[in-house]
Image 1 (spheres, rainbow, N blue to C red):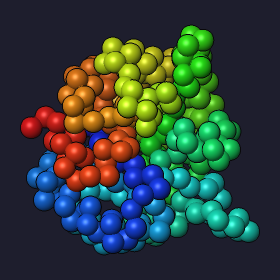
Image 2: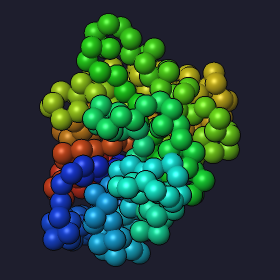
Image 3: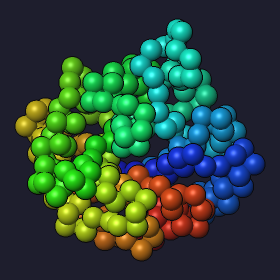
Length: 251
C-alpha cells in the first residue's frame, strides 16, 4: 500500500511573518493526520523559520529547488547539503516553472536528482507536458523522455526513494485541471515506464502525485484513481483551510 503524499509548493510567496501565520493556522488542522505524508515547500529565505515551527510535528519541510554541487563559486545557488542543514527532508526538482523560466533541462534535472539523493533528501521529481505538446499528441513521448533522462544512471535502490509528480503544464495556475481519467491515464503510463525500465516492484511502490490546480473540490476524485498517490498543491497551499481540506481529503 503506497502512503499518500500531499505537498504544498508555496512558490514565490510568504515572508517570514506570513509563513509563521500560515503554519500556525495549519498545524491544528492537520496535526492528527497520520495516514498522509504532509510536506510544505517555502522559499529559501524562510526555510529556517518554518523548520522551527514544524519541528516535532507531522509536517515535513521541502525546498523548491537545489543545485548539483556541494559548494563552490556558484553565486545564488543552494546545495542539497545546505538544505539538509536548514532542516529539509524533501526537495522539489524539475518543476515546470524551473524548466520554463530558469533553464532546467533533462540533463540538469538528472544532476540535481543525483545530488539530492546523495544528500539523503527525498526528491519530488516533476514531469509534465505543455498544452502544445498535449494537443500534438506528444504527452507520452515527452513524459517518457523526461522520466528516462531524469533517472538515467540512478541505481534502482535510489529510484525507489523518489516521489514523482505529474504536472500538466497547461493546468498549472490556469484553473484548468486534467480530468480524473486524463490524470489516471498519465499516472498509469508513468508506472508502466518504471516497470519497463526498472522493475515491477519499483513501479508498484513508487508514489506518483498529481499537480495542476488541485483544490479541495477535486482532490477526492483524483485520489480515487488507482495510480494517483497524492498531490503537489500550488495556490491552494497558501491558505491553511484549503490546504488542510486537501490533506484531510479522506476524512
